[in-house]
Image (cartoon, rainbow, N blue to C red; front, side, top):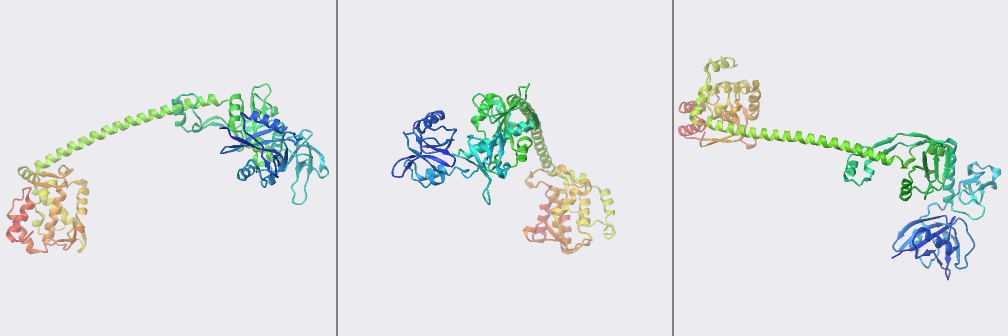
Length: 576
């Protein structure tokens, strides 16, 4: 279903409306249409008007709203009765064919209804109102409108009134006139200077599409986002400037060129309208480089020719490339570059993957080896804790000479009257996990943590264990007997570190003898208060009992801990 087209046909600040009846009006409209050119012909035929611009404003439901500009008010066409009313008053009128909401939306889009013309043409040169002298007021300025060519009056203003040009008779579109003047002024500035600083031209892969219909090209184009530099900032010199010359099916604002060379550059001056996609496509098809210069901030503002010249000639931030004739060939170079970057990335990724596979393989091999060694270690431990094997290991660790050498170096050697106290030779189940006779590590532990230490200080199993594994290059611990996890030997379950368990068990004996006192709370299990710092067991009764028990057990059995506890309980009818 075709939409109904409504038109705001403007002439200055007035719009054309059809007369209806009973003080009602009709906004111009057309129901049958095919193209913009056909619409222009219909308007011309129906209203006897020539229009210079026709553009779509917005679409709303079944309506399509356009703005058309008529440069002159002409005589009525007898077939259609119409009049011109101001935009401001039109909002308060009642229209038979359009509701007020849509009308207000349509008319409220005019942002420049209060624009006053700042430029005129005199002797084919753009003149700003500020350049008009006091004796050139009114028609004495000899200026014409840049858009429609009719004579202008110079109104220099007084008080709060702003100086401006006014049409002597009917007004044309002030916006168009202002824009045309700035275009002509831009041409004059370019003609006077004959050079322009062009911005650097770069390609951004993230903004480009696939022009080669090749998914790989598109992929590699967008995979690498680094900008591709085509040209640096460049001072372009020229000697020919043409304003709004028809080229093919487009009319560029300005065309500059260098004689004797085929170099041309389209310069689009953006005042109120910027280059749209349709015009951009036409420029690309034309194959001429083009830039756009944004001078919209000069529209209806205080004028300074030097500032405008600086923006048009020297400044870069107001300029951007619309099209560059080197686009296609450099886009191909960009794609080739990105292919190389992508290939390098792929190679590096492949190398990383290969290295990762090697590391994974090595890791798995290491894990397998660790697993193998762990199983082997567990088997060795299981064998070591078999009674006969255990006895052999304990026997091999006994070394009276070495024990005596260590004993002589202790601080309690003379206090002990050169006799090793019995509690420094207590057999414990994990004693084979040490690299030495049990008397050596028990003497070292007692001297380091208990002898002549502060009373009522606290010591923990963790601290003692840490000292053992760090002391003197870990000389005390036999790491072949530290298991990766729990193991069984015979009918007994052993924890992963027999050496640590041996230390814990040994501390229970020192606790029994009164040297230390363990905390009752589970939270502090493994922590002890140091009660005595001497070499004499504070609890003499328990000391005598333990010595009796030790004489009744086999010191070289893996079940020594449970054997001592069982004998102790049987002899003294109490729990150990």
